[in-house]
Length: 135
Image 1 (cartoon, helix red, strand yellow):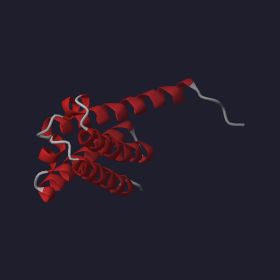
Image 2: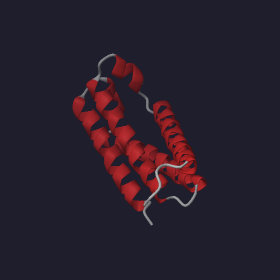
Image 3: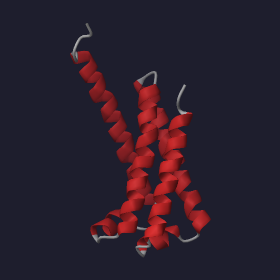
Image 4: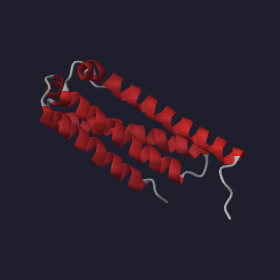
């Protein structure tokens, strides 16, 4: 019979969870710094486009971080791949912004289709990113 949670497994959970949340927060902070629009201010003001785009960013970052933790061979490995995931997501944002020409401006103006497009790019790239991290 398998043993219930041990102290060692609980500490491993806390460590990996901490690294995952830490990488997620760091990546979100980077995204908040690089985007020309202020997501948090816009969301507080009720801008649905910004909320949808930011939700996509969170999911797009969390998916590969999940994969990095799940398939890592060590805590350092999970941390490195989590950071790679963050860099890929930032690049995806820049490509989407370049392709649309006015993505950030449209999100700032509350154009919901721009928020949906941004979210779709973030989640799609996050899924591919996560899949690429599997052994």
